[in-house]
Image (cartoon, rainbow, N blue to C red; front, top):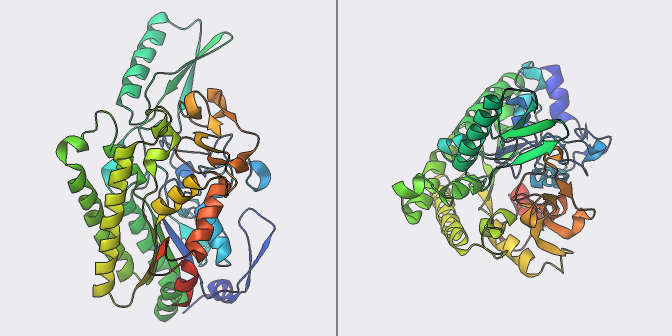
Length: 420
C-alpha cells in the first residue's frame, strides 16, 4: 500500500521546479519522466563520481541556469531533457545519484535521471579518456625538477591516449606551473543506468503498491538519448574498436547491444519510449577543427547507418511487444536542418563553440581554470562547447521532439505519445 507521503506526491497537482521558485502544474497525463543517456541530458550525476573525468560542475557551465551556477549539465543552461520535462508539466528530473543515499521516500515519482556524461551503449565506452573534466596539480616552482619532468611525461602520455585530446596543455602562472592531468573516465554506462532503474522500480512498487506502480510507469515517459560517445570512440585516432570491427559491424553491434536493455525496461514497466538517434557528430566543433572547419563526412555517414539500425530495432520491438509505443527523434535530420537554415533559427555561429579556447574554441574544455572564454551572446551559437549544444539549441530540439512533424519524429511526436 502506498505511504501517505507517496500518495500525496502522486496525487498532488503542484510541484516546485528543482532549483527554481516557478510552479509547475500537473496538467498532463504524464506522471513521471525517467531519463537514460549521456552528457546531452546529464543533469549532474557525474558530480557524485569523485573519480570521473567527465564532469561539468565548474564554470562557465550553468552561466544561464537559475542562480547562474554550474549544476553538472554540459550546457550554459538547461538541456533537452529539462525542456521536455517542462513541456509535459513536470519538474526537472533530479540526478539519481543525488538521491541514492537517502531514504526510499525521497525517490520522486515525477521522475529521475540516470544519464551520465561520457557514457555509451557499450560499457567500454566510458573507460576511455576524455578531457572534459581535468584535475589540476599545482606544483610550486621550488619542487624537485625530476618531479616536474616526470609529471609532464605522464601528462603527454595520458593525452596521447585520450580519445579527444590532440595536443598537450601547459599553463603557466606567476610562481606556479599548472599541470593538467586527464583523468580516467568513471561514468554510469547504460547497463548500470538500467540497473539503477530496477531499484527505483522496486521502490515505487513498495511505495505505490504493485498496481499503482504499474499504472504509474505505464503512463510515464522513458527517454533514451545515447550513442554519440560510442561513435566518437570508433572514429578517433588509434581506436582499438576500429581494428576489431568494420564500421557496419560496429553500428549493428550498437543496436544489438541496446535491444536487451530496452526489453529490460519493458519488463520493469516501461511502455512509452522516447528514443533519439545520434546527432550530426561530424559537424561538432571537435570534428570541424580536424577538417579545416568543415564537417567530417565519415562519422556522419556512419551515424546515419546507426540511426537506420536503431529505427529498425524499434520497429521490430513494437511488432513483438504490442503494448509499447514510442517516438523516435530524427536528431540527425533535425540538427542538419537547423545547420542548413541556421539564420532562420537565429544562429549566427554554427562552427565554433561558444565556450572554450583555441581553434574554434575546441582545443580545451569550457573550464575557467584552463583560461576558457565564452561568448557574450549565447543565443546565436549552436554549440556551447566542443560537442554540446547551447541552451537555445537544446530548446529548439526539444520543441521539435515534442510537437514536430513526421519529418523529424516517427511514428509520432511526444505530444501524441503522451495521449497514446
